[in-house]
Image (tube, rainbow, N blue to C red; front, side):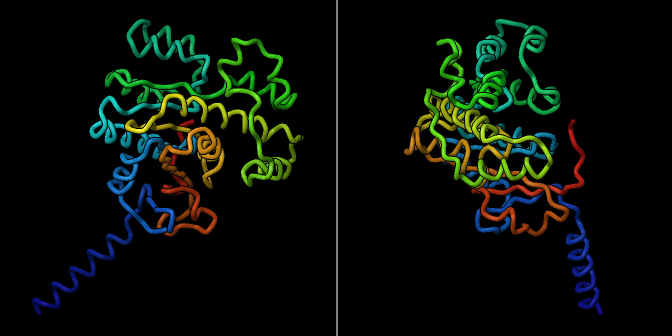
Length: 288
């Protein structure tokens, strides 16, 4: 009787565990579930980590902060942060804010900040400030991405020399056959919008610029943790493709964030997107 009771209790516990609602599940590139400690271990051994996020997903932003804190515990001042959400022409403002030269209000009034900055990116910037870490603004200024969308890469050539300091060196390499860029035209066209071949070029200008600013700050012996929309690094394209051209010796680890109705099974379309794939329930609340 006692043995039967133990079996029934064990079965009840297992059933309860299976019915838990996971806020996220991490998979490796082979589709096997792994825990955060495995992700942290491999991230700590990389020169560059490309953390692809869903911009309005709170779990992504929480995990980014937790990974930052955990890597700092291991790497200290050898950790460098950077993000798509800050444009290169705001670099001086970020440096002044992190060094305490300017007040928070001045920084937030003058910098080009995303609508969800205070909930999602401010904690990262403040952690960098409090830990004396560098935080690199890597993205091309949006006005220059708009130039590419209108005129192609050729439009960048006529910019002033000072403006070109905020862009990857010209001419920008571009492969229109990369699935990510090719798919943009198909995806946007399917949404009924007016799409030209310049749209993926504007995306490439962002990828190339982010890769460039990562490359001039990353080196072996340090860890550069970069945050960007997952489309900028999925399938080892985008920023990853440009980084491999610039500094092939760097060890790069990619993370892809995806939403699924059921995170407990990795959907086929998300298989192999990155070294680690984070799956979050599509019912998760949004931050903006």
